[in-house]
Length: 195
Image 1 (cartoon, helix red, strand yellow):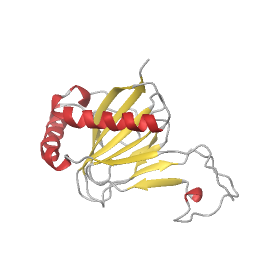
Image 2 (cartoon, helix red, strand yellow):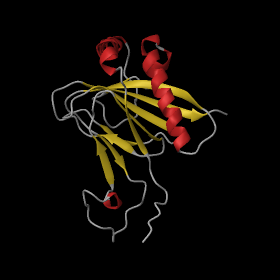
Image 3 (cartoon, one colour):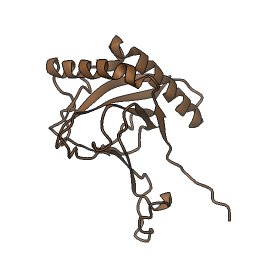
């Protein structure tokens, strides 16, 4: 029997080799920005998380330049894997700070082409990012089987520091509740196709 995977949903994971060199500086910088800039995302159900979406664009902050450049290079590789020949351009970048009881409900960025999440500061026990399958569930679908992706309705990714997640922007995702007393910082980016 030959299986053709129709309509796959790709998720890219890359490790930034220079993470340990930049982490402390960027964490300190993010916490400083938190103390001087209001939080963004006024329309979220989750009110207890800090983010700079629409209040501070990290694409315009030179301290993030090397990391931003690497993430854009990875996004271009991912775009090529998706079969897209047009170049991509960065649209927006921000960061999120999660503390105990913080979460982010399911949402997507379907007005963009590629989205990215970079784990700047985290522990494996911190809140995971969960992706929801774009395939509509059927009452006759099989029960969940760990080693069979055809049975998954969602997939969670452990927040390992220095890891970059890339995905098509229309993929629904959330951040599960932060159940431990730790500060978890992630960076987020959106990219569009050049017009």
